Image (tube, rainbow, N blue to C red; front, side, top):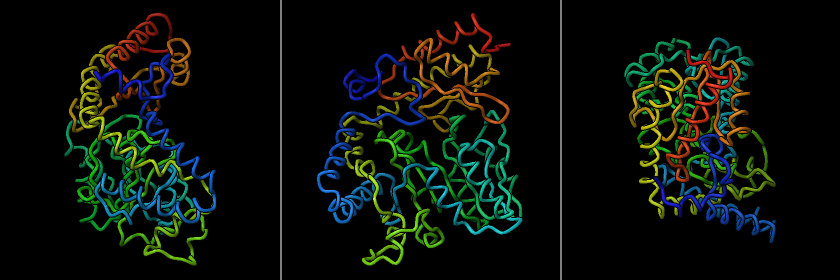
Length: 391
């Protein structure tokens, strides 16, 4: 699939068949070197870096990211991960007893916990609306979702690409319907930047968070929170610091509150321009298309092996560079560890509601041999152990 030059750009252990890019990404050497350059500058002159130069660097990075995802740079702040970003939103969102947040039953577990925590504190309800699987159409998915709407619904929260199932949801259409109903729209796009095309001006979500350290390939701890200007004053930072009643305020209270947080190493945030340059230089649109092709072309093969049904039609509309196959196992953690210990395969085996999925991710360093290695390992496990049931 991809050329050896691209594979050599990654720092991953060559002894591991790495099929779990979706969890934490992997950083190519040129981007990692840029990261270390910023860290070295920080340590060379910490005071200037944190109090003076850092804010200018953050602005440059925000502007590069804003152009990449099509939004206003002053409507973005960097966060370490999407969970941090959603905690900002959930903690400040004014909920009254009886209010409801409408979501799906396929969201990321950490964010389910976040919304449950703050809803319970307010006496509100986090509604995990069931989505029928397998998906058959965009229209049916939207219909399923809005069956959870009531007169008590205050906002919607939905992932654009779900974690365990790897399904792409039609968030543009969902946001449009929700806005017609007067609801705040909050989208978790953790898996989106660098994976499928992201255009925030088209999606028109009120709040959007994405991880750059996943499919965009930045160092770990680089994500963003976007909030439409008219809603920015609703959300306080998790840490009140120098940005509150700032002695030298910028043109944006939103930026002051969330950027001026005292001593921290924000070097990972500053790698965005280099990251975008790397993606462009390596024709990442073509790389991603080739990755999708290999991911999709193997999906039915794994469904057949595991006696499972695909979770959706095998189309770009529903699947990117990840595919999840339902797998019958009573011991998902043990299966995951067995695949790593015995076969040196890094792949997640994740429980979602009452079923378990095994999810492979394909990126520039992967090839058909990697999926053949996985297939052969699963065949052996089915034959020689009781970890997988295919009846």
